[in-house]
Image 1: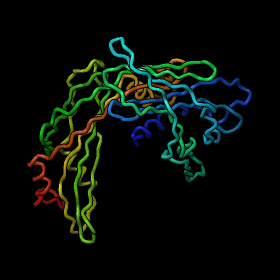
Image 2: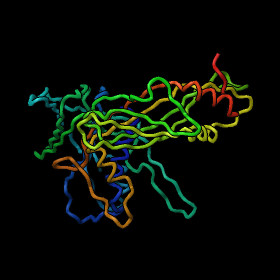
Image 3: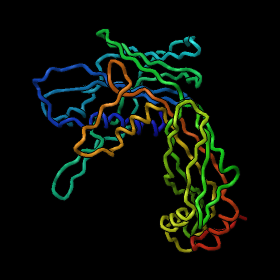
Image 4: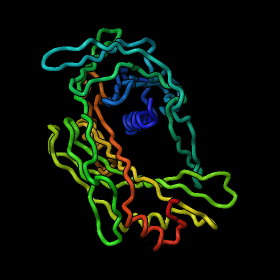
Length: 338
């Protein structure tokens, strides 16, 4: 599993429980609620599905959360993903199970008042995941069906965010000291939300180094939303040239006798489906503390989301004027490459 998917699944699952009280009523009637999260990507060679259950019991909920048996079913659920195109169904993909071991472990911090905050409160580092290693097809709408031992069935469906690419800048990226420039692309089918970020790559060497070091500085540019999920809409976001230079001045350490060489810039656009966009918007934390955050789910018979995403990255050279300006007008150690 990619680290990005692990992170988003962990955050989503944590959000699901974030409104719970730390103490449960041990006499309350227990209800078996299945929680499902899966974010599929047409480029992934493995599709992952996280299936857990709501839990209750006497005592502190944070302690219960650290026990895998509180959240995992004691048996393997029957999970199937089926594609559909023009009314024709694909071969069903049966979900298998695997235990992954790279989830962040439980940790705590104690503030000056002695209050303890639990970080990553759920059991770790092992996580039970459902998966299929069959790559999904962007032209299909996929249905997820999960059957429990008691005969109850959960279901959901999603189309895949199609692939797309950055159309502007074309060959080189310009960072002007006096103006903004734009990044442009065409929205793909099923892509609604777009988050844009930039990463400036460089190498550096200084006396005492055994070799040159590859380094980078990343920053968030902005978010844009398409009007529909049909695709074909022209999208753009502006980026600040002056901010690029001020960022390098503030972030690059002052290393004696350092020599640096500018590398390529990575333009990354992460796109999410309507379901994912809605979920993230509701759980963005922008609501008042007095407002009750609504529970958003597209899982019939349970709670959670079955959604899709796609990420594209374009590597592009700095413009010659930008590189020259960086070398000649900023005391950051940048040199021309031989």
